[in-house]
Length: 133
Ligand SMILES: CC(C)(COP(=O)(O)OP(=O)(O)OC[C@H]1O[C@@H](n2cnc3c(N)ncnc32)[C@H](O)[C@@H]1OP(=O)(O)O)[C@@H](O)C(=O)NCCC(=O)NCCS
Figure 1: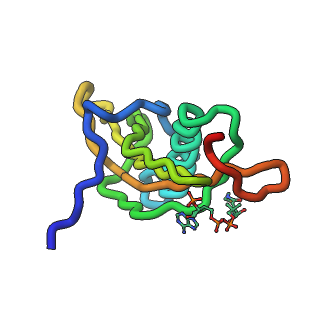
Figure 2: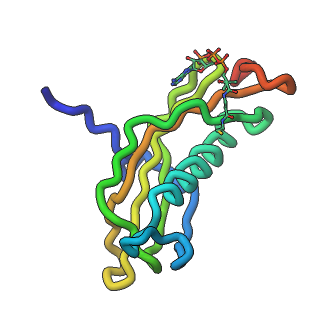
């Protein structure tokens, strides 16, 4: 069975967030803690939601298909790209790809993590409401 390739490609992706990380973000192995990357993925997805309907508030309902392909190191330039946005009634799913540029290889981006994140638009009572309309 062939696995569907859902990764973002350079033509369709949008840059949501770019940062570098510090020694405080590392795990005992000396690489960046996975939870820090998950937090960045969630932030990048939320930023992407602003372009769907900036007047809505969103909460994360699911993070799926998370794959950590390669480690992130202190000092890497970390870029989070979004693509494949799918708008439902009250929910929006987005693919988030995390790419890094190593300090010793400027200009060469490596995909380190990817995930699909789903957000739900909520009203003042915390219940789902239509994304549009
Ligand atoms: C988000 C929340 C308001 C949704 O309430 P709910 O009554 O469970 O929602 P519904 O069953 O009506 O589903 C709402 C939408 O989410 C989608 N959905 C539900 N479960 C899903 C899942 N596991 N994965 C992806 N989408 C899902 C539904 O298909 C629906 O989308 P649609 O309207 O576009 O078809 C509620 O689950 C919640 O408050 N969760 C906590 C959110 C939060 O605090 N996140 C921060 C992390 S701490």
